[in-house]
Length: 228
Ligand code: NI
Ligand code: MN
Image (tube, rainbow, N blue to C red; front, side, top):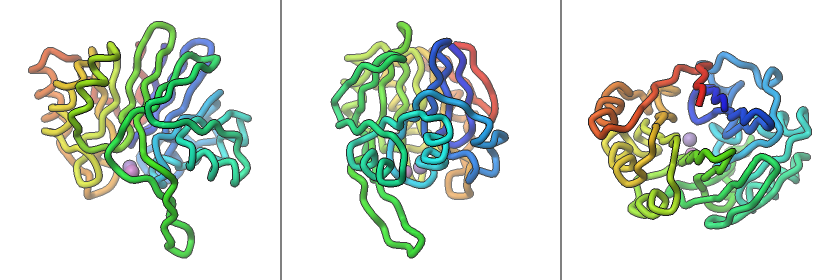
């Protein structure tokens, strides 16, 4: 399995048979070295509707004929913009050709701001648990720390967790380290930091907290690939 980090919360997972892209905020991120047109995928997974997650999802879905899998209201929005989409609910799991996806809680919001600055809410934000070829990957989306992460960790033996650490909009370093304690993943990749000034943090401080727990932590530069 090959995991490519595009910066912010965006990554792709190549299982060998399918490529999934999560939260493809590529053209809007000056740190992302890849153009959306250069990324091919079979499915696009969205955790919520904010622009730094929805990103290039709709044009990528159209160009690749790849369905978007997300929460119900955001899926309806994507369909209204001409993408194919599967709308699911938090707590629900579904089987797809690549494996299984389950939507989890995330404490955040989910909205789309239009050109006139009006905010449209598109349901609840989410995280996702992916079961792919015997590997379990958790992408937390944007979220605060919450105690139910203990339950997620108890119900799923997480091999790899993507956790936001940038503070301001999501968990910061200390809260994300507590999340690692709750989730007990084997490996952690911090995301959602250093993209914009309010979310600039010293990720090496997070890594040392996670290292101290005996959990592997990879700090990935945008464009970096993890063989997993
Ligand atoms: Ni957000
Ligand atoms: Mn965000």
